[in-house]
Image (cartoon, rainbow, N blue to C red):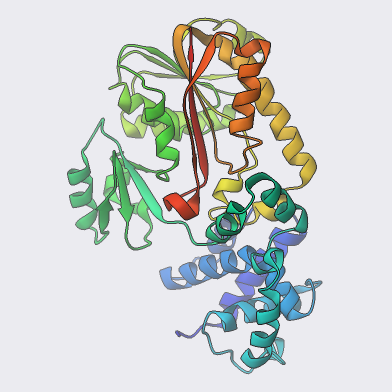
Length: 400
C-alpha cells in the first residue's frame, strides 16, 4: 500500500476528536480540516477524507480493538493505526503505534465479529431496534449500510440528455455508466463539482433511490406541485425537470437558509417555474388547503437509510430522537396532506429503513380521520443490500 505521512494522520486525528468530542458533523469537519492547509494536494485530501470516514464508520469496533475509547489526541492516532492495519497498510515505527500488530488484532477481530453490534460498529440500542423493525433482514441491511456509497448523478433533462452528459464528463476523464431513467453511475471517485458540466447545470448528485421519489408523484406539465419539505431542493429540481418547466412548483421549508441554497441551484439548473417560500407560521400551509394537484412530502427522518454517506449519524442518534421524528412525521402527514385537492396525489418519502417511519406511518394515516378519502396506490422500501443504493421509502397516495 502507498505511504502516508504524520501530517495526514494528525489531520485525521484532529477531525475525529472534533466529531466525537465536540459533536461536529463529519462532512463539515472534514471540509474544515481540508481547507485549513492549502498546501495539501488532491492525494492528501483524498487520503484524509477517506480514512476519517473509515474510522468514523467503524469507531466502536476500532475502539474495542485499541483497548478502549479515546481520551486524548494520541488515542485517536491509535484508532487510526488499527484502521490502517486492517486495511492492509504497514505501520511505521512511531511511538503512537507502539504495540499494534496484525496478529494480535486478528485474534481480537475474530471474536468481535461474532457480535453483530460490535462487528457492524453500532450502538446496542440501534442494533436492538433494527432487529425489532426488520427481523432477519436487519443483519444484511446494516452490513450494507457500512459499505461505501456509490456516486450517482441525475441528468438535468432541462439542459441535456444522458449521452451529452456522459460525453461532457468523459472529456474531463470522468467515466460513467447509464442506469435507468435519468441516472448515471460514476465509476471512479472524482471531484465532480469542479467539472464544466456541473457548473453548466447539466447534472446534480443524487442517489438512485432518492431519484425514485419525484417520478412516483406522477406530475404533469402545467400542474400546481408543492414540495413541502424541500430542504436544499434536490427533489424540487427533479420535479421541475419532469414538469418541463411548465406549471407552478412551490418549494416550502421551515429553514429559509436551505431555500436560499435551492434558489442558487435552481438558477444553475435553468429552472424557471419554481417559487421558494419559507414556512414561517401555520398560515403558510393553511392558505394552500385544497390547492395542489401534487404534494411531495420528503419528511424529516432518522436518516438510517443514508448511514453510508453520514456514518457519524449513528453516534448522534438516540432512541428519544427517533420518537420525536416519528411524531413530527405524523403531524406533517396529517396537516400537509390537506394541501392536495380532490383527485390529486401525494408522495410520502423518507431516507429511513425503519417500517415505523415508513409503511406504518402511512397505514396509521390511512386509519386516522385525516386519511379518510385517501387510498394507497404505491409503496416500496429500497434496501441497500437488495437494490444496491441508499435505504429509502416511497409511497403514493391518491385523494378521492
